[in-house]
Image (cartoon, rainbow, N blue to C red):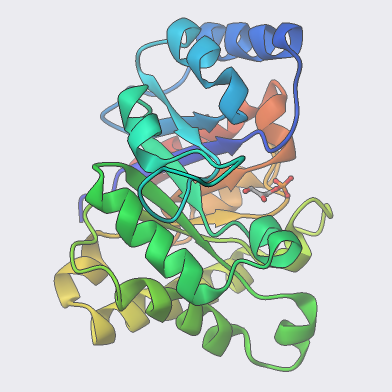
Length: 253
Ligand SMILES: O=C(CO)COP(=O)(O)O
């Protein structure tokens, strides 16, 4: 099948220089499976990217948490895909639900961002996910399909995209999706890719889960057939992030 397990750590808007140094030391000392078995990418705030990149172990990589929708210029406060490329930051997270909800990023805007970042040679962790209201209304699959469609309309080549399913109700709440709930949506997303992109894209694209993942629940989640890794928030700042990376071993069994 060839979908390498992927573990992302989204540090969000957290950290001081000292705290960042501590997390990097913790990561550098962690015992994890080889790069053949798991791809690890951590995403500090922009301002810490050079520090993390220069001090992080070479088998782990970095991601930005966002970038501007087109070429840089007169866009105060933004950071462009070209700048990330210039800093040799290989990955960027786009469409996180916090940006969709708090900063008004629409499906279309996220689709444009993904397409532009890819065009500049970045790899993208593209996030989708429903709110509790949407889940209770029975529209989970429609919501994530619409979010994915807005990306698929702008992108032909999915090689450099990892799709992150992050139910909004599970983010930062301690209410993790059950393995069955996660598997159901991952399977629907894969079916959607099969029908609307190509069977090859559906088979190869990694679909990772995010929302209250921790050291204790990561193994059982990793056992789900359509779950190819995690995007971790709170626990990515703690020693248990190493345990979550080690959940990749489940796929080998
Ligand atoms: O938003 C997330 C990762 O992008 C998940 O956050 P938590 O792991 O803190 O729930």
